[in-house]
Length: 218
Image (cartoon, rainbow, N blue to C red; front, side, top):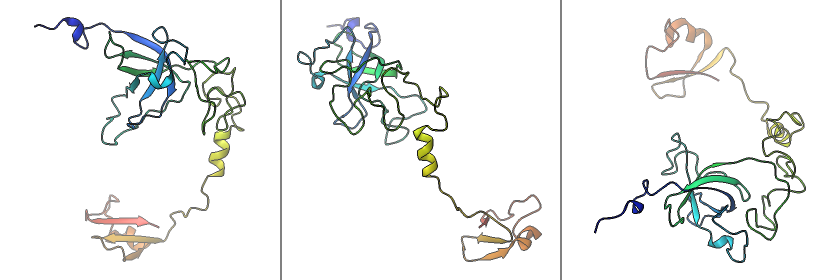
């Protein structure tokens, strides 16, 4: 019996959605998220609990191989993230794929209902924050875009403060005349800068004539 066109992925129609991430604790550790889709799912978490939403795979760019731990995986989305995607199985709508996120301006935190972060507590979150996130200071009523990108609190931003606190200082610098020579894998040889530039290890073009010779300034 011949299959109908509706049974072939790719020619069975393109059904897309906009929705909200409600869970990112993927048991298979694939970086999947559970998404409640506008128009397809009810906001009533009693009739449709978050745990019953299908897991959505995340589409990565072609610069990310998404296999064997290569690239940037898993994707970084949080509960409350608005996303856009499509269903691989257009008619059944059980295999969603997220292709991107949508920033906005959250006006209130949804509690006790879907299309939001349904958690009451969390190490990170819940989102959006009424008191301000500890890493960025974002709170309800302001754009999701970075404050640094918007030119707000540029010098007082918490991210910059943490980077300055963690900055390493007192790192040794390469200085003359002491140099370390690695000749054919022997790291115990040393030479002075004067001998190095005279051509004993470095040629006229500044490159060692011996490919196995490396000169490192310490």
